[in-house]
Length: 128
Image 1 (cartoon, helix red, strand yellow):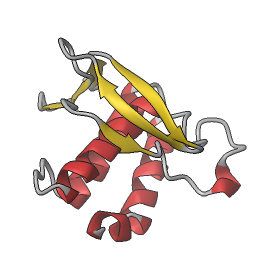
Image 2 (cartoon, rainbow, N blue to C red; image 1 turned 90 degrees about the horizontal axis):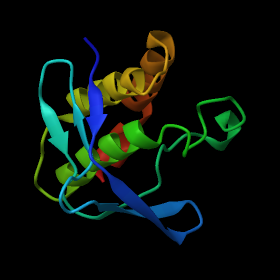
Image 3 (cartoon, rainbow, N blue to C red; image 1 turned 90 degrees about the vertical axis):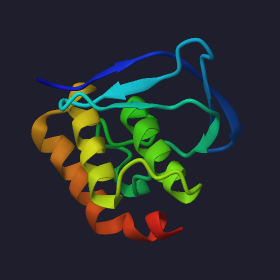
C-alpha cells in the first residue's frame, strides 16, 4: 500500500524561490503514510520546496517545484523540528519524503535517490 495526500493549501510567493504555505483552514494538506500515520500541515510556514542542487534542475522531476507535495511534507517535518514540535526524527523524516515521492508518482528508484540525498546532505539543515 502506498501513502496518499489529502486536503488543500495555497502557496503565496514571498521572494524568488520561496513561498508561504497556507493551509485550507477546514481541510489542511496532509500525507497519510503506508503505515497509517497521518502528517497534517496545520499552520502557515515558509518553504523553498525541494532543496535540489541547481545542476539537477534540468532533469525532469528534480526541480524544486516539481515535487511540490512531498517537499511540503518534508519541509514541514523539518520546520516542526526547528520549532521544538518534533514529529519524527531526521532519518524517519527523510523516509517519509521517499514514501511521499512514491505516492506522488515517482518510481521507487527515484524516490530512493531523493531520500538518500537528504540522508547524506540534509543533516546541516536539520541541525539548523
